[in-house]
Image (tube, rainbow, N blue to C red; front, side, top):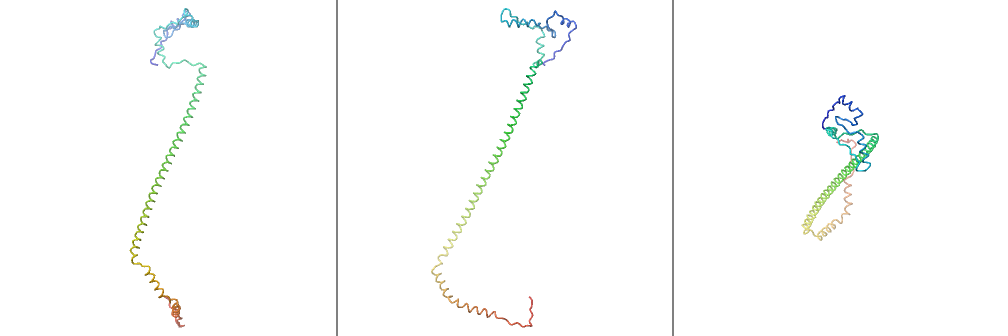
Length: 221
């Protein structure tokens, strides 16, 4: 409430006057409200539909009327009836069901987000691994190409050096001269086979038994 309104206890004389049957009005904190017959006449006249006999409810001109309702505040509410209690129970039950459904939906969304993040992380890791393998393949290919180029360069260099050596030896080499030299050696050693028997006899003569005295003793090393 915006402000506190003190309640004044009515005097005994005022209470007796309020309980008198002649007074048809209700007194609340010094305000006199109209009696019930005024409202009945007003409702009956409104229901009849005639404009001449319509009775409007009296105005509340008491000095503390507005201040009384202002002091109640905006959060004032009457007590609910049994029907309202039943409707409130149904509403609360429906609200709990809605909250439960929303909670399940939130859990499902959280699980789907977690799965999506996990799948995205795995995809990123797979992309990184594929990229790393590609880089390694490129590096290995470049290394192999470099090695092949070096080996090819070495082979070409050796081939050129061999050609230069052959070219340097070619003027000194003559096929006809080599054939003549080999033929001469073959003619010179044509009778070698007949000399093999004589050589073998000489070898066996050198390996003739050596006489040994029976009194000789073997001397160790």
